Image (cartoon, rainbow, N blue to C red):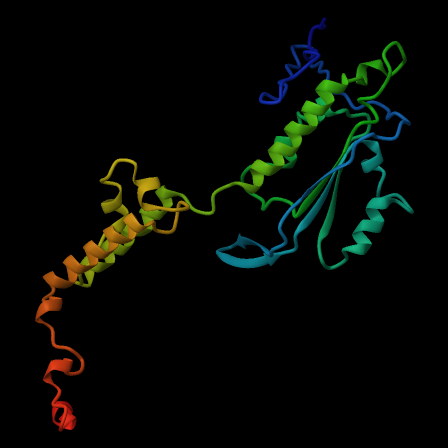
Length: 269
């Protein structure tokens, strides 16, 4: 049962809830006082350690990686004196920035509203690691004062899965796209024309074949045996058109049949 301006009681793993505040500006996503229960689940999303870079004013500079703490009030209060978040920031001082994203009173159902804002799939480099610290409010008992924070355990599990999958998706963004590679290929061809030198547009050539992505590329970038064959054929054809026909070119040193066994030095004069 819902009231005007409120959200459905459940959500799905694939579709985060959409909250319609309505004309009165009411919305179900309201932070409430946190439960005193200890969260039953702590999930971490470890990432591969590597330096991150950002561009500012056309230049490239190294950016310190981030450790994001995502959770309810236990996370929100983690930078208070003696807090675990503050201690973590000290542990990783000058190594990584510890960023707090704690929301007192929130359960995993409401947290789904936040993940696309806190962890966008484009823009900032994804966090080096993220802690997911929810559960105390989800576990609020029905029939008690905080029952509106209650989330059934099966939904709680699915919500956690949605959050983790979103973080994983943020790590799967492509480093390259075919469209952008085409832009660079176009500039390469343009420069070759300006300088009057031969050029092979492999980007266009490969795409003349249906299913070229899997036929010619082993991992979206590197060549399969068939892809290598295409490049070889195009390079040989271009070299031959430039007068470099292998069958007409001399050996660097004499063929063994031209070497006199009794006086081999003659062949090398």
